[in-house]
Image (cartoon, rainbow, N blue to C red):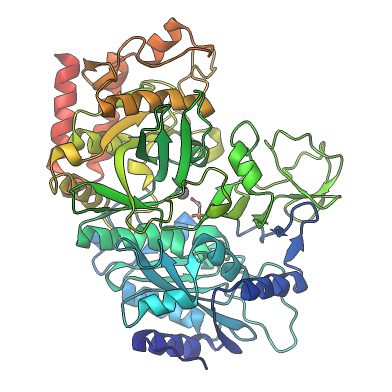
Length: 597
Ligand code: SAT
Ligand code: MN
């Protein structure tokens, strides 16, 4: 048995080992040699395929039951049911511990138990926090080393300090001599558990090896548990990208952005602007932790060290920087394997080969009627390999945030961009954001809006109403002039023929340009009932195929549509019951008055 100097950690490791009964216990040091050894273990086990065409890259195929975050099986086990709120699944913590304790009993037999000390954020930053993940999956160790900072340095920095306990098992013990599966997990989705104990700052995950179910530093810790810590300690743990935008004079601003899935968030974080001399650099593509600095501004760090991005749709058009980044040292999960040892996926912009092995390990041809890559296939790739990573991305001081973008995927109503009147109005806009439900969601509600406040619907570890109140409270902790300005954006407006009006991708930089002009005091705006909108001509459309009429449509305040929107927002707000912040209902009333005024 290993031993570590942090007494609480030492005791916890022994307690977990006694419960899970692994054959061995291994403490990760985070070295390259260790990483190479883990890779070799997975190659030898038949789980990983080296990719001849991409140095240091490997392909994994998951079990078909284990391909995405399991939202239905994600639990917030707060002591009081009400504290989990209407958007989370709740189980009494004692009951859940008893159920999962029985599942964990002996679940690591025949396996090695890996102990991974990890830091979310640069080691030692005042914004960073430390966790320890115990797992029986070498795939998790490999991915955690890319996605976070792990090993001896973290343990040193932890000292006798506090850490978040993250326990993970794939839930597949091995009998003596039993051959392992290439993707061990619990195939029955209803027996998987992704559990959070917010009061104890603890995560228990069982039965899944995939993504956010298993890489516990990401959504489980950095959003759900850190969100509770942030609420209690007066800071922010948000589902936001962080980018640095530099204009042609060399002036720069840092911008955060919250978008639900399928809105091109990773692409925006690495965008290639359409103006000569302008530059976007990446700080983070998914999560932003923000604390007040001594000057009263909000400073952000990216708590992660890698990108876990959706592969399908990634192409030289949608994200040339990511395409370059994933040529080396990248883990691919659930994409197609070509006969010459490369990977292929739908929407890559590369013609499909005549034959490949699909994500389920079967022969695939272009006419077979199946996807080569699963729609949630992922790359895990080190952030420092990104060609446009900002040099200061690991600055322990964080970067001062000037603006926050919020937005979803809306065909109608929501204009291209709208500047909030102040912080509270901005929180109101974030609280009503969302996307239209598409056929991909397999529901009878196609076309209705699924509201996803700050893209945090599946990621708030407590009551959504209290979360929105916390955001409002943050705005009262400093001078209004020091707060980031909040912008509501929508790249996805369609015309009557169902075609996108705005070109999107790199041209979204035209909207970012107006935003930094606003922050600098030069951008022209007109005041409208919904907020400040770009004055005619204030958004540069030189060189793109967007007419003045299109711009008018993109920036129109459609009164009837907004009044209908208000009805639907009221319905949504009802679900927060008496925890709906009074300021938000006041914002909604004020909007209605302005529209009718
Ligand atoms: O699997 S993750 O939670 O890391 C990504 C996602 O589903 O948002
Ligand atoms: Mn995300």
